[in-house]
Image 1 (tube, rainbow, N blue to C red):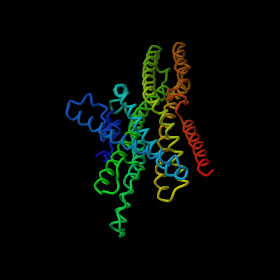
Image 2: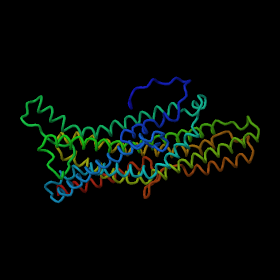
Image 3: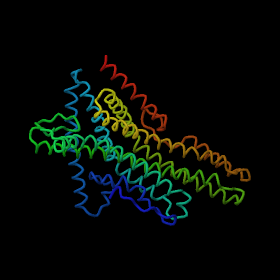
Length: 408
């Protein structure tokens, strides 16, 4: 099971690289996406997963078209502006899910190569993993992934199943004369989707699967990003700790030079991998932040103008979008901080008894650390906590404009 509780590993057990990437990769397979499908020797399983993925996204985008049609029809009338904007966050969420899946499909081979490269430099034995503090990073990462996934999937589940649960309780337990046939999302169907009960349930479960596909594709790209940045942060912090603790006076000059040369090569490789992360994810994050600004704006508007039931649902939506942006910005900030720390550690080590050549190499390390590793979406500054505040500011500006338009 995906969320089964595992026994904690003892200090003498080795943590494998696959354990740090298993969560997003396994979760992705539930909608048919297998990052390592090209390496699967079972051809039938590979094509069945691909068929399931394509079928799921065809169904998903068919409902997205219905949402857009509903939005266009209702946005023309100011009396139904609230109804129109109720579907706007769902459209924005759907576009983000579609775009993330498209970006992953385009960059799948590059992403797999990146994971392979990270696996090559992953510490393999117990002693090395203690130095890298692998157990801490795994535990911290899994907690963030679990909480983030639960929150985002709670949003899709609450919107999907709330109407059916509400109607069932009212009809079977509270004696309501009719079974209300409502949907969690506002859709303009090309047919009568409520009169016939069979058609209703067929459409309802199609919509529920659509929401699940959107939620998983929306979440998993961020989970893969978290997994890659966590490992890069681990490597940068190891370099910083090792560099600061190194005592050049206890070694010969030849040993000191060799140590720094190996460290420079290791540092350069970690920086190259961080640049590859930027190349794969930067454009996705740009559109993610733009769409998230609109989603937060429309969800916030619904919270301030809807009834109590809708307020609860949209508050979950609002919270999930905020947390998603915050998590990405948090890990972007972690990458910047950990890579910047290497220069400080180089300066703080005991380099006084070392040779001039050793000190010169240290200067190069310090100079290189002045340009820290980061994720840099086009038109945005490097992703950090400052970016989070910028997204919130954009959302509030849209929100203020929408409120002014609605209330005059």
